[in-house]
Image 1 (tube, rainbow, N blue to C red):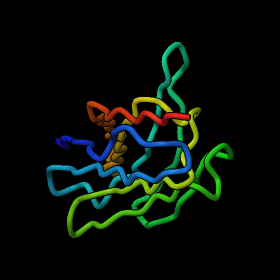
Image 2: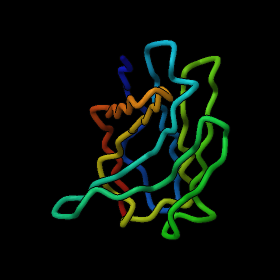
Image 3: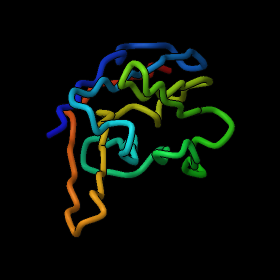
Image 4: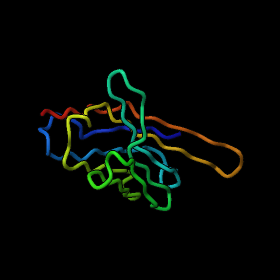
Length: 120
């Protein structure tokens, strides 16, 4: 079982930066693939960035060059560093962890989300 808690959201001016944190409970977190998703009002939830258990990363085209995802397994934490923020980045940001136990079991965990608001 994994519980995820996001933090670091807030109100920032356009061009500013925020760092989101996703802290997990449990001992399997280091074996999970983790993604940051966001959902703006009236829009579908979308993938922003993803990091595998091995540390391989990818980010959405819309945030390429501005957002960076990283993880610190010793702290059971995944980060999303967001620079050069734009008003269109305004959304609730969610952390998602996926775990495959290698024996047919596949588990998905979501956090409660953290609000990011970028003013123009």
